[in-house]
Image 1: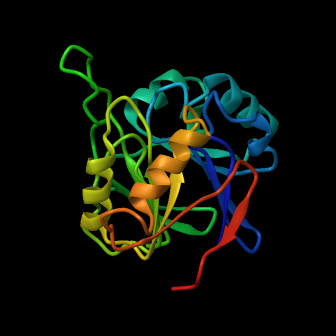
Image 2: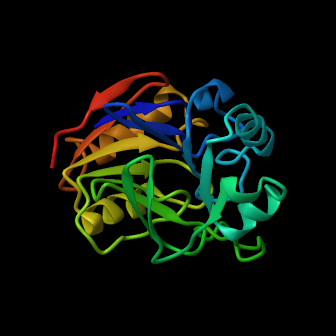
Length: 215
């Protein structure tokens, strides 16, 4: 499979002529959706979900299908069969990819801030995108897409999370608010100079791709 990062929390996964996009939000160029027929959205926050971009993409491509949680599906009302609501324990096929859903809630930001729902997607039993949560899927993961920065996480939590999931490799996502210093600090703790998370750590710049080994 080929993994391409498209800014902040959005990635595209390809295998031959199969393609799907996860979390094309307001910090991502809507062009990532051009010609795509499968989109997965973890939750309703603007950096993961753009209603305008998805409505435009759905109008341009009648074959587009969007799998997401109830809250996002409600905001996409009117798109009919193009939107499929899923939740914890759901399993489906999107453009030939087998997808399992893990998780229910967004990580706690603060007790005074209401939590929203959040689901993570395990693609082909290999690549896990948790959205804004540190969900442990309870099944082997080859590649973990790790949200390395947010108002709800600390680096120590991320180290323990990677240890719990125990993937072969980690790629950083959710890093759009970090400058070069912040990115270097995170890489230092999660990479070879940190306390050790047991997985290879890397970061793709927007538009950069990585080939993932076959299972």
